Image (cartoon, rainbow, N blue to C red; front, side, top):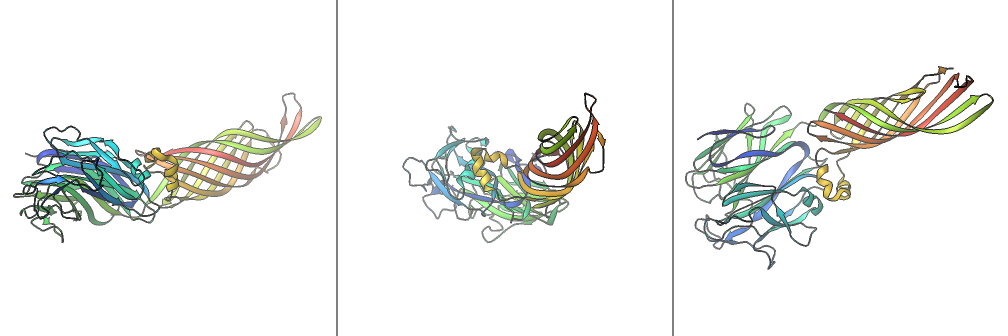
Length: 481
């Protein structure tokens, strides 16, 4: 029986097998950073020399010395300083009894909490006795920071053929990291003979043809010969995984619950072909992480924007019979376009804008640059539980520009003094929702410009008017595709 399915986004996949749950992409992005995984077992054999869980009676594993938890496990999460956590997903799995009640709940404790918190899964990948559940824990991990994470009270039966475990997948961004495209996919495969997986990738920005994979597989048995991982027609192996016993319950330690395996595959005709084979051992791939090394980020941009200005200037009026001088502040709308080039943390741009008043308009032409921040852990602390909503392409920046402003009056201009220098400093952020990029900022603008005008008042009295522009405070909101 053959089935054809497609991964979301960039990764179409063709699979065949039993008890198949189609793999789907639940995360894909190009970032400077990496992905970290930690995990552990929640069942362990009484006989630690056992080679598979068919021969070993499996017991609950206890790692928290807490009388009130049925089973527990811990692992330490570490990542580079000044990193920004983009996403964190928690997976747990087990072999339940005939009553599968509770397979979608787990207890979770972070380094900054003293008590367990019960989580309910966002989705259950498989809902039969062999179950896998997943929960987005981005907020919890942002607030939990580095340290030991605990899992407890996994629903799983004791006895032969049983298993239980968990893994936390976290993607972080860091300005010192390598630029990569990271993709997380999950599903369920019940490998009994031979199953195929063909992954299509876009090679346009890749530095090399090599793609790094991390594969999580449940219930691989040690020394059950004949199970192979075949990548582009070649059998994979390393110091922990025998060429004919690849899925052997190794994930950094020997156990009988799951495999965590790393391997590479070269992109050939925009594809990496992966095959799972077995003669005796039955195992279940359910989570695949891929990483492609990319060229440094470069992008040309064009951002139309609208904004609100609050401007300060001084007006000198000369109207019969008496002159007067008054400081003035006025609010007005502005609009413009910003075009430039961005490379990783820096961008240069040309800014063209216009603001309109009742007696004229102010045009500005400026050249500037921005520094884009990746170090903003303080922002996560301020946002608290809302921090996870900032994880999608948020880019705070700070910069400035210098240029020339021209005032075009609606009145009679007495002399050509309507051009002057301008400079500004600004700070803001931009973020993406789908393919749309939004940008918002706040800026202080200094203008050195004087305009002399003359005209006739409503009472038919001649007047002279001199306006000296000083500065303004502006907010703008732009959008691009």
